[in-house]
Image 1 (cartoon, rainbow, N blue to C red):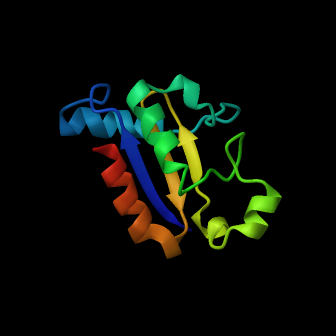
Image 2: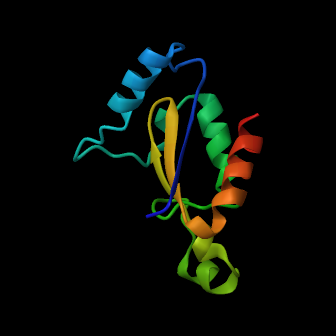
Length: 112
């Protein structure tokens, strides 16, 4: 079990608490067979956030994940690898607990 975090495009997410919670429930009802690794489906702000975050917290899977050589050569890279689930206006991610505080700070800083 890791540290979970979600970022979303404020222009696309509902504004009221009730609507937001319903929206959150819908977008995190992961449907089997759907792919959640294509950043091109997201809004521009989410894409920009993602490209900045993966510089430090690379994805575990997909075309942006580190090579075996990079994992061997870059100290601490493996523990910073992150599981990203990408939607049209959000990214839901799981970090290792060992990087939770720094990942949270980076996610917030990058979002603003």
